[in-house]
Length: 179
Image (cartoon, rainbow, N blue to C red; front, top):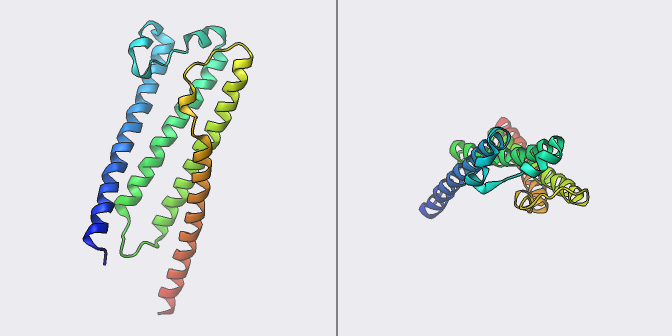
């Protein structure tokens, strides 16, 4: 049986996860709106969320513009998906019997999202660094992939936890069959 303190902490973390999820959805939505305004009404971009004005890059090369924006949007959407998966896990998990196939699958999915965010962030950072040498000036883009190594490491740790949970599920199922 879980104590009241643990239950309180769990629900507190659940609320924090919801707040982060909502913030990430707002960020992703704002970046999508910013993207479309960049294409159709670039004069409004300075008034929008994060003021991400890549119109100079678009004028130099639309291919580079779409590539960089694709990285930004994909990473932002993957972060939202990661926290949605966490919320589903926390909402449906039975703490009295944590080793279930649902929990193992959700943790595994979270590891894939986290690792994807880290790898895409790292690739994007290196590409943008390379673009700077070719005359493109991507200012203030580092904020979108500054934490790539942390996400890669976190993805590896979550994958290890997912593997342990899968083994725990197998052992629990075997134990249930034995009894």
